Length: 399
Ligand code: PMT
Image (cartoon, rainbow, N blue to C red):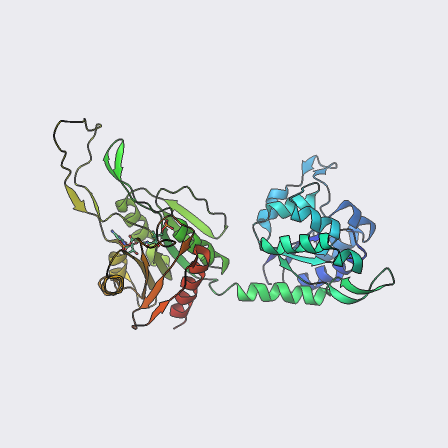
């Protein structure tokens, strides 16, 4: 938790009094805490209490009438390493599930790129109501982490499930998350993605069908585990949101080669997921080539083999991962690439297989290691495939 920025959202329920203890525990564990309250939350606990404990001003309104400034929900969302909403009332949960942004807390939630923890707190019947359960399920399905309500005495005098989890439980849950998701913290990973375009003339190029989805999924997976990611991407229509990802855009194989070789020395590992052109026109015409009666011959020359160059530069501590995109003799060709490029492991995928390779959301891969291990995975989403590859990378880095 040390050094983490935590944005605590407090909503208007009786369990808001526990927010004081929660702030205290988070601060004690070394986190910087900012508190954003809904207007009703102020009826349950004073902003002064939470400001004193968090050592930060409390945020409730969009506009600060005293100094004429506004509280930027976007900045808050970007600042946070984690957002905790505790207590989360049925009302706020419903708004979050439906994207309603009518106060600083819900707008900050929509702006947050970090993991969001939600600790529901309400009376047992409100909690059990199908509407609330559906909203909680929606929040879960979009990646929020629900810290389940507990069974016990409720403020209404009734007894049942709906009590907010204790501040100690919430802190432990967030802390465990950071621990689990920091396996690559302190590591720098370079990842290539997308196609390269090799110009023929000012209006034409040689390219391929790579969308960049595999490489971007790898970048997100590594960044989510705390790595600093240098994502070197060919021309794609994707965007990367994670603050740990530094993106370098290139167009040609030569530019990708230059960016990779300039950055590799500072990296602990590199994953080469880009579909790099093996050949480029030997000369690029200055003007658009005119249509002629006869055939046109373009002489191609080899591009630099980036993975092979990195394999030669690699220190014993660095891990180099390549891909092999094959249409036939997959295992044999992948093993040849593994050796020729001095890779630690190669990820084989088949360009002719439905649901694998270029431009789809899934992939079917086999990892082949330099130790001769072959691990075939079922067809999965590219995000899941990225997690499998990153897990294998972690094994190599820990050897
Ligand atoms: O981008 P998507 O649409 O999501 O598709 C994903 C993908 C199919 C592009 C990806 O899964 C993949 O297989 N990437 C590698 C494609 C490729 O060029 O494979 P290859 O077998 O031709 O190359 C072998 C390895 O050498 C690759 O790691 C490649 O990045 C690298 N290489 C190739 C040529 C070159 N000049 N320099 C290189 O570094």
